[in-house]
Image 1 (spheres, rainbow over the protein chains, first blue to last red):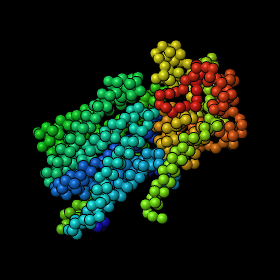
Image 2: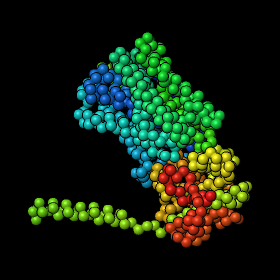
Image 3: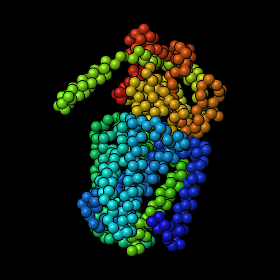
Image 4: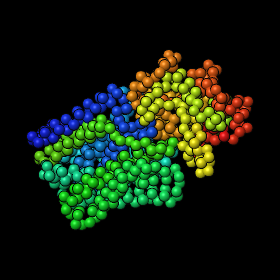
Length: 383
Length: 244
């Protein structure tokens, strides 16, 4: 079946070549980071996590959101999803890979990564995150592969995959919950120290994941003539808008608790996020961008006129994904670390090298996604 | 033996085992040693520009003097009262004493959040209370830096060995990519020496000793004078006390 991943026209190969090029470009800077140290990034002693961990959080969410298709398809037998369930599973595979890659490049001593397994520390959420992420990667690889092979042979998938499907549903929830626990278990960072963080993560994940899948479906329709069916697109749009409304609601709940109670430690971080602190308001600009984009996307998604216009909905979804990426990525990280323990604001600006490495990892993820999708579509198209 | 009897005996054995183990847990002997430090804020105020303890500590521990403030490595450093005790001081105190200098270092918490989060056990709490670091096991994920509410941990963002002024061959240097912090001079304590900062202070502003020992100097001072710790509401129970 793997040979199907590599059969394609000239433009397909050019696209692969382009992705390989960007990956190599990113890798060059990663080698520089290996030699010099993480000092080539914009991080520092006060803002000690940055763009990498922001991306990690975001992509764990995208991976978890495959469950938004798995539940209706396998539990409620929504037949229409049969066409794209494999795309959701392969998207989860690529996203988990991205998440793991982003944690990996964030390590100061990547050569010692196996210390996590050699000296397992059950009290560390990072240990559990490694367990659930690798487990989820394997689950989705097996499920996607078996489903596709069954489709190719035109038989039912083996019955034991049913068990894995039922396991994969709570597992998907767990990967994002554990990722939220990494943050919300730390009382040192009042911005993260909220029981609502895990539900918030899930809501924003179930917004951004299906939105990305919709974008991919629209792209595949344009470039490959793949037609997922109008029902699927409509259903996904509904999923995105419902999840988005919950996401906005959760955000408002968080704001209420902080601003009504006026609790100084929480207030400090949330005012920095929304209004700036001691004249530092660069992040506030990003926060409002994200909030305004989210709210407008919601309005556009439920307005019939816009949601029926394919171009308008495509742009809306792109902006929405960007808004969520900002919110649960950079804004979450930076408002957590700033103001610092000594009541100052340390501005974090990702360096050129850091952005290049990020681009490299993205394109590696896109490369994996392209290969998997091409394989899936080739199987689907040839009887 | 009948099955019924066997189950009875096994059940009784199980319950009594549970009981005994819980009893033995609750009768855990109290720790003999609990190291602590007191810092006399008034002395530090009188000698505002004094940096003797910082220089002494950083010299023997090969702590590099990194020029970039964002990448600084610090085991012990100074800040101001209003910054270090931001939520503990009222507005009036902040006005009058807010700009007083205050010495900061790892609090060697009784309940250290950094230890809990480490995914490799590279940082751990010793029986005598010292929060230790294993530079050879640390993978540099910086989870501990996010978990520490005091900013006591520094990361080697690059190879910082070039910034060590005078190399002390009796203490390890750190490579790039690992976290480091104050070790309460465990290498000196084991030789019955005082921590270097305490020893170096020309004004006797710092004392070190066993907080479980009624006679030790920090115990005495803590009984006699009013003291505060940083962020007490977090429940980390710092072992570094500030005498007011």
